[in-house]
Length: 436
Image (tube, one colour):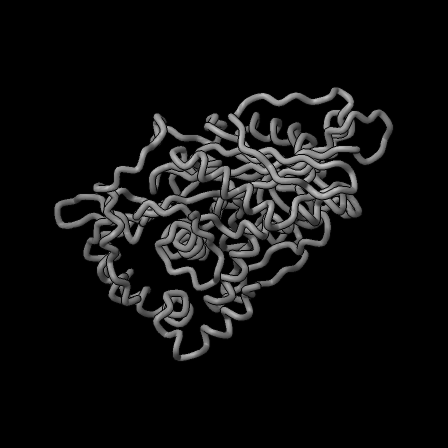
């Protein structure tokens, strides 16, 4: 298995000097900074509908994307050229997708939100208690039958996962660390006394569902395909006990941004998301309905989301409703530890690894809620939200605002992460899996 430590070791060798991440690590505060300063007047950056956007205006005032492989055509301005030269990046010529005759579903790609758009197929696999999952099958997406005494309906015995497929500019389809999702489902299944697919079965199911629904993967820069694997107890059982049968279902939907507009959080002081010894550290289905009430109340007051505190003392920050949280002060990035009440996010793990490669000091530690008052920057991470800068956090009626946009830590991490996910940056981490 490819480990992050292997990659970090390779970066220190002179033979890896051509690596973009290595150059970012050693020069992102020098060459990149000079390129920014030289073109400061023409650069603007913001966070639009939950996504970082970096643009420049050329001599004619035309908006051009900076190394943004999500655009239908990558155009280089004076700033983009300076940044590319600083990193010795060769402009991609095979990224022009105007000649590609890939079939797309009839979708308004510009209007995508984060909601269900039914696709063509779903994948189903079954097994009995104590047995191994058999070969699954693709079937048309639609309703499924379930016994009313099933474990998922009566006792909430179920797990979910979430990952994405990305279309590159040359029409390749990439998955991002699907084996991590498979391992996290296995960890959750052990906690919930459930049979689970092997890593190979999980990844194969994801590949099949993306391949069979390929036309629903959005064009570059228009969104991603969100993949939802489900593991549910569905045997005809009445007593309080693990189900006698299990079903693994995977479906997918094209999606846009999870949050639209600035992210304004409020610290939740009454309700708790998870307790020690509970299921907060796995993606149990029962973790989510319990947060509907505080989220509804927060949104009614004009907030985007809530930030939960620990259940024991109510003094420490844990996570938002669907994302992990990071706090930045000077060169130190802090995030709460995954100690059983916080979900070990795969985006969280990736951001920590990238940040350390860039030379930031990353601390996984308990964060007092009062530390939010002094933070320079706060951002959330998750498969759905990606890396989302927090505009403000309100605690006990005190509102604190944070840095966003050009030059922020979150922006740099977002650009590198999404560059790897979209195939715009060479993946030396070994994180992406290309669909055959």
